[in-house]
Length: 244
Image (cartoon, rainbow, N blue to C red; front, side, top):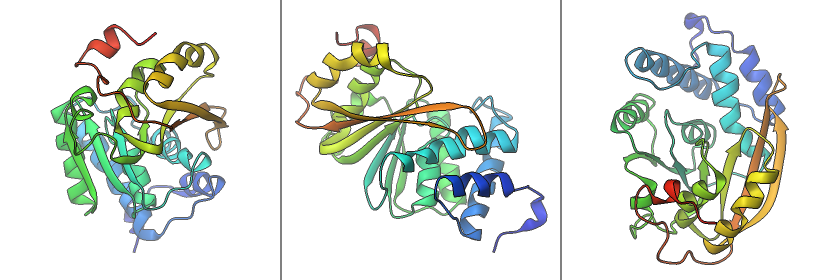
């Protein structure tokens, strides 16, 4: 059962979850509190997040990650979170939807050590943290076109993100990019890259985070054909020379 000894006011979180159509068990709430405590503990000696107040982490990390439910149904999919950082959105999604098979990919080993600590302390199954670059892992047979769903909250240009992410997605799966702004210009510039990589833009789901005016845009790109073998290009090149 959930321990109330930690004195966290969970009413804001529970209300936000409800607005997303989600209800969590005491055990799941306990896991989120433990995740928060590990995040702030590790953040004291390494840079994981600039946001540390409980309510802010709940809103801008936990609920933001979970806003994916507004864009798709989550069941037993094979999901990869590219550029996961401190585990967002992959870990919150795993906590709420335990049947998901989750891969957390990050290029910084220190963050992967933190993610492994979270996985261990929360006793999570069917989830792994991997240290490496998307450009390298998307070339490997165990990762390339193996996922029903690729998600990313990484702050990067959409054309660049598409080259990182679309190669991981199975044909007819989805790449969903979390964005904090309207995508008119950026999306227009990325259309060629998305098409070359085998993707097709299907929908933009616009929302505001619960109890706020913080805008979010979930862009759904469907994988309609296999990604040409030359993509992604070698590490560093997608960022330096985006597909145009």
